[in-house]
Image (cartoon, rainbow, N blue to C red; front, side, top):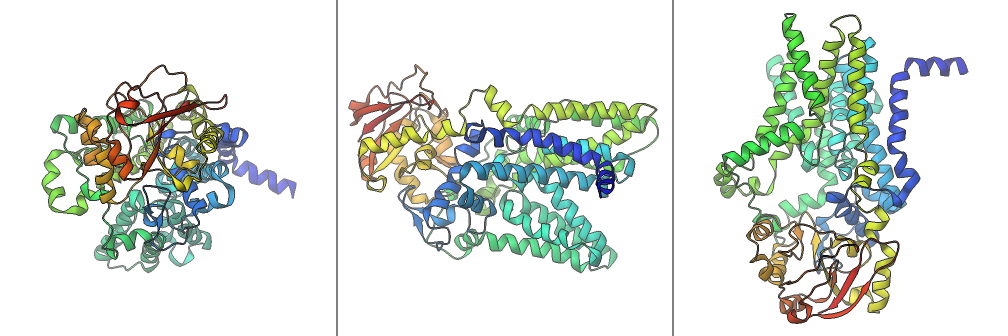
Length: 562
């Protein structure tokens, strides 16, 4: 038995080695727990809180018309993940910290094995390049993906591998391939990326049917099956979009895309070389230089690597499409057809990381075949890229930025002290936040009038706007930011701009905060929680209660009564 185990290990030594490195990459989550540093943007400030609030709400299986009273005086149930979301149940069963650890593990392992299998079976299937596939897949798996996306971006190579396997093997497709196809929808987002993936698969299937007169029934079944699972999972979204005529989302007032040609080209340049904050591939400079060098070497030797040329050529196309989506020249289309105004087609750029690393792998194969010893060069290049991305793991990256840890960000003991001081049940009063993300009070059980959500009632946005209107008038850029998007339903300050985190060591103050406190009172506002002292609080009808701080929290919270 031990001999067989040893042989198995030797045969699969490269993926085992890669998994060992991934284990080290993931270790800080498990050793530090709530004391780990993780990303704030679109993570601590949003998704984590959405899952926690819903998990504790008692409304997981509620009907679409149900509202959660602790957010914006009644956030529609449809604004939060559905009861069929796999990540939600991790929060229900294990709590936020452990759920985050598990979701990170799922994301990294899914990314590694998806890319490894895709490269080995369909892109560079030569057996002697398994070390190369494992190295490139490892680098891909350690990319700084948007953490809350889980398999939304990181799982795309896995999805391609699964569907290509079904297309190729047909009735001989193993059962575990079908099982994995069925599981992916519950750990990924349909709207953000998989709607594009399934569209590509559908077009591929249709072209083959038309050109080859071959109806691949099982390939079609995979496409239709995954699409059906996504539709079932997103039953709340489907109901809101096509059945419920009473709910009007704030997204109806989206008015994005006013860049001139210069701004559009700048956006193209930035995305091509550095990617989007949610899908950074860390392609500059090493990956791009390796691809270019491989193309030059191949052409010099009289070869034209069509696969590499096509995949590499797709990267600027995606970046250009992404940039053009924000070009003012598309405003007539968006203004005339609401779908193009509310649905962001530019998100197809989430395919970028997968494309870059497929190109990277093919380019390394070309380099490794050039001359004796060139495999060593390819191996060194892989190690260099793995080193580049390993250093970007959350604990290292955000620890160096000196951002708060998970526990520090939410500071539960500090906010418990505030609740004790107020002395009422949180459901009996409403708060808003200044110089602080409103999801922090939400995490701690406060009922907030402000929020950060993908959708909420448009009517509520208009009511909330009256509160911050005097402040928005002082800064046109903030006014445009709120009016044309509005996902961050925040109390903005012209003095602070879009900075929402101020530690207790800060000596900054808000000298003049102009709020319509009458409108705030009409909306039900009772208290303001501020991360900075408001100098003119008495002039706008506020009463300072006291400040709160403790050794464990980076915040000092100033409590004002309306």
